[in-house]
Length: 96
Image (cartoon, rainbow, N blue to C red; front, side, top):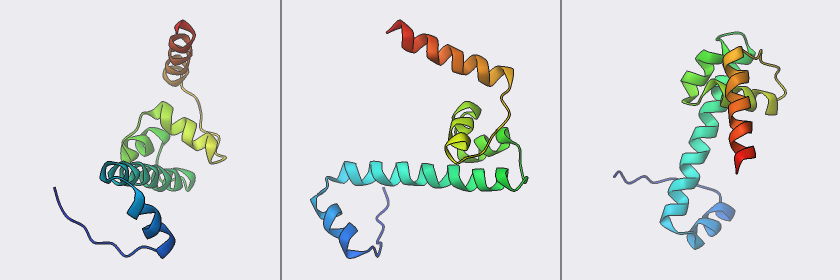
């Protein structure tokens, strides 16, 4: 494991002082994941890459990238594979 020193705003430092170490690591993981998604979506939005390439760049599935794109107000095309994956996910949720 590597130690890292960061300068952060006081209000965040106060919150982090109260947090457990595993929470801080998880928060960083989630933040970095979201950052990668946003960077990939920006390139997708500018026409620099396909949705599939953006998903690979961000390290998520194309289906997840499509959901993220919609959340950012983009209208990615749905492929049959993405639609089947979405329907499969919905069917699994209904089985619970």
